Length: 422
Image 1 (cartoon, rainbow, N blue to C red):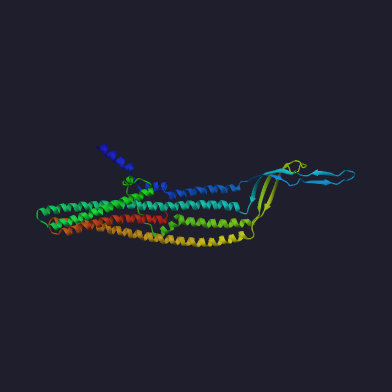
Image 2: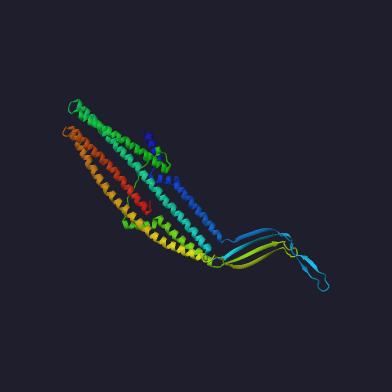
């Protein structure tokens, strides 16, 4: 017997799921998260590509040319020597060039490209974090919904048991001639109403399971054994929550990175006004002129180059500067908006805590009221209608307590989401 009990405990423990496990599964299986992970990997590869700008540039080229006429030049007779004609080039010839060039200074063009890639990587990582927060909050809400409806289902089942027991007692009283048939019919009507509520709640439970299954990709049958969360609500002041959000919220970091990217792009545009200093080594080969030798030779040199299109970089930099001013205002507005949402979530949490206290007190009174009413009914002091009213009050108090408890948890997790700590 003890072996069977131990086996049942081990099996149920192995198949039960807690909130942390469901969040992990959602992170692994969610398509939005997967999409952001691909974006992060793409940004990492682009950063590696930007780092290649510091390596030397290798170039080569081959050209085959065909001239319409073969060129030559004539030497007039001089000093008794006859006139001569020398072929200066072939009609068709080929040339080849290969070399390596290293840029020593480019006005910050390469460094800006690398820093932009780094900021873009940070931006995509923060986007992934923000998406994860949204997905986690969806999973938490679905998780709490399943537990809430499951407990409400138990409340309705208890209500059905109480009404069914009351019906049996009334039928016994009726057979003894102590009450009228209307009292029995009243209890039967009440039982039918409770059975209707039970079917409705069972349907809501199945829908809640399906939603959680959709988010986590876990079979609905396994989700029936999820464990209630162990949550310790932190008693933190509002100002501390707001201060913490400025450090944690990914959306703030995202906008900060956008601002940095804008500044780097402006620097990159202005770098076009600076000359580019480079060293290069080139091998040239051409058989165009058969009189020249050697056909191939090396050259090593240093040079400066400067290329820009009118004042286009300047005006582009001015446009980016205006965008930067707009982003700074947007960042301030974003922080103010987050602070306001945190304040709203914080007040919602405080209200939820008060509601739970009220609901727990009301449940105690309702339980005592029902106990006294049941005793009075058995002693024929009150009517069946009064007992049904007491039972209905007890059921509503139980439901209110369940709803208040899970509303408190939901409010707390929503506050964590706004802060960025979920």
